[in-house]
Length: 277
Image 1 (cartoon, rainbow, N blue to C red):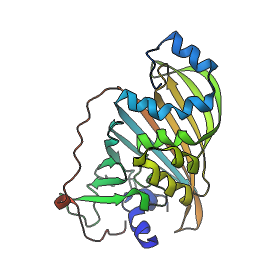
Image 2: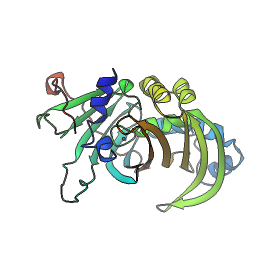
Image 3: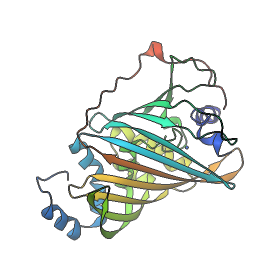
Image 4: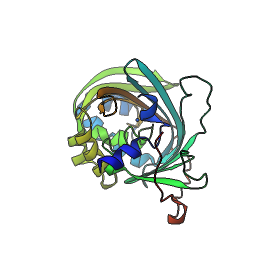
């Protein structure tokens, strides 16, 4: 299992680890929803955020993952769509240039599904027309980091593990009025409260990260939908025996956007060995 996790953690980075050394809506809106946000317990409000996304149905998403270790810092960006009811999504993930600054990596197409991550344009010996399939529960980070982007619904479900949170007041994000919360979530608690599709992955992350406590900042609109969420993870880099600091940011917008995601057939999935780097 450890060997498999080691191979798969290299799967995205030409990727991730190589570069670093991964209202319920009640019909209320506007002033009414704002008043509710002021008077409600921030912890309970954040516990409901994932369910609010399910009610919203779908959205577009932008992701950014910053990694720092040993004085090296890289940023991986992604963009795509996500269906919160089916818990499937598609992201185009762009890897950073190599240290020399002149190698252009092809974007990796990632399909996100309950318990699985599919990657295309993986490179490193994988045929161009094939997908790589990764069991997210087998990854020590539950794919919160390995794919170079945090699954948007997993990011929301992590808030089910919120233990402490502070309401920092109203602000504006990309022209939308939002409320800013800052707090700490517990991965083990989040796993216990998560939906069946993400429970095993969050449980794996609770065991695999350096600490189960995850600081976060999140911005909710007047309907209780997540507009921006930023998690700060920490894990041990086995290659260099040091800690890796990861800041994962997810922006959600254009709610109700169409999502057309079909998972690969078994014949389209690469069954060979995944090469390092």
